[in-house]
Length: 175
Image (cartoon, rainbow, N blue to C red; front, side, top):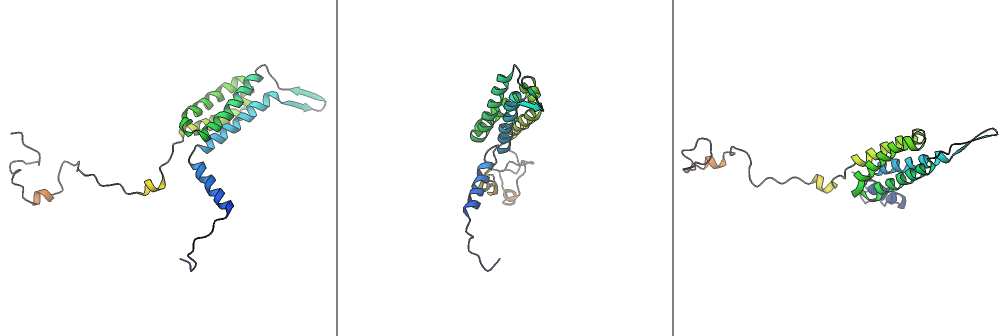
């Protein structure tokens, strides 16, 4: 222990960082982030125009509107994972299904980048479970009021119960 035992003042940056960390731990943050990021390449790549010298190559397909819808839905599902933790399983499964649909609709899932991000983000969203608060985890579990073991610990037998004189295993007799 040091000589100076006063509590240290926390700077506003440290306070903001700590509150962001607590916010992030209470939700499937990484699943939401990856799902949100998956929507952008799926939305962007079908509408991209590549230029090679004087040659303009347009990547737009007939499924451009479908790609836009899939991308917007993935962004919305990523935000849903962040702000509506109760629907994390629905949002995760929907993100996985949209990732699979993007393989067919959106240039192989935006050249597999958006597909992989959505697949991993959806899986992280489905597998996330809220943790127990630290106070509840550190609290000792109370002893059971009734012993569920078959044999007694010997305290009652030492007192010399006369009522169980005929019983050999400590059970009750059905007279």
